[in-house]
Length: 415
Image 1 (cartoon, rainbow, N blue to C red):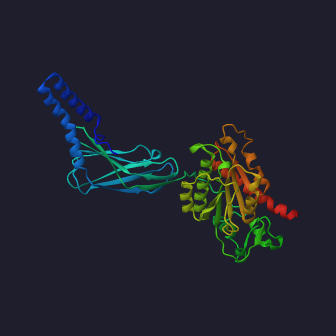
Image 2: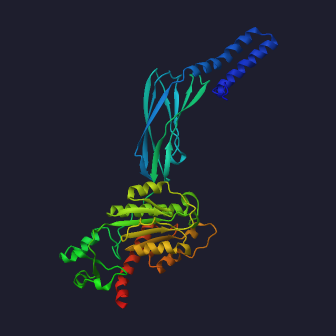
Image 3: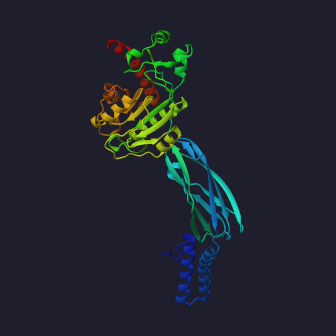
C-alpha cells in the first residue's frame, strides 16, 4: 500500500513538521498569530503534493542504440526520445536512464520549460569492457515542484538490448601446412604455375594412401602431393570451446573461461577474415554455424555442468577442414571425443589452458605440460597461461603444425 506522504522530499517533510509544531505551540501558548503561520507553512507541502498528483504527464520513450552489437572495449551511443501526450509537467523533470553498471554511470538529464505537449531528444555514450547482453532501461523520471517540496518517481516501460561480443586479439596468418585449408592463398600459391593435371592434387595428409602420391607435382612443389578425389573444395573450420564448469578456474573477468572465450573469438574472427566458413561448438554441442552467430553466442556464453565433452551432435561435424580447440583441464574421459575430432579433421590444432595457474592453491607443471596429452594423441597443441600473449601462442601453434607436417612424409616413407 502506497503511503500518501511518500512523495514529500526532506524539505517538504520539514515544512510540514514545522507547520504542525507551530500550530501545536500556538494552541498551548494561546498565540493565534503563530497558528496562522503554522497553517501557512504546513499547507505549502500539502498543496504541492495535491498539484503533483493531478498533473503527472503521460510519457512515452523510444531508444535508438548505435550500434546494437559491439566488441568489448568499444563505445555505443544511445539516443532517447521522450514525449508527453497528455498532462502538463509540474516544473522540471529529472530523467535517469537505467544503464547497467557494466556500461558506466547512469546518465541524468534535466528537462525544463515543458508545455502541455512536448518532445525532447537527448543522447549519451556507453562503453562496455565486459562481454554480455545488456538491457538498457527502463527510464526513471523524477517530477517535482518549483520549491522542491515534492518529488514523484515514475518508471516509463521499455528497454533496448545491447550485445557486447568478446574482445578480439589480432592474430597473424600462420603457414598453411598439414591439411590447413582455407586461406585459398596457400592453394593458389601451390598451384599457380601448375598444369591442369595439377589442379586435381593436394598436399599430403597423415593417413593418405601412398599409392595416391603424384610424383611430378611433388617434385615441382617441393612437398609430397597426392591425387585428390573429385569434390568441390570448401574452406571450413570447426572451433571447439570447452565451457564445462569443472575444467575452469577463477571468477569473473580474470577467470580461465574468459581467457578461453577471448581466444575463441579471436580465432573465429581471424579464420573468417581468411575466407573460412566457421562453425562453433561448445561442451554441450553445436551452437553456431557461422562466424557472426558464433560471436553473438560467445557474448552470453556461461559455464555448464556437463561432465563429458560433446563437441558436435552426430552427423553435424564436417569431415576435413581445420579443427581448432580451446580446452580447459583435460581428463581421460575426454579422449574419445577428442580422438573422433582428430580423426575427422584434416588438421587438428589446440590451445590447452593451464587452468592450475588460475587457481589460488593449484600447483602448475607449466603450460607445455598441459598440452602434452594432446600431442601424444596426434594433435598440434600448445599450452596457454594467464600471462601468455595470445598472438604469440598462436604463432607457436603455427610452428608446431609446420614441424608436424614436415615430419609426416618422412614417417610415411619409413612405413
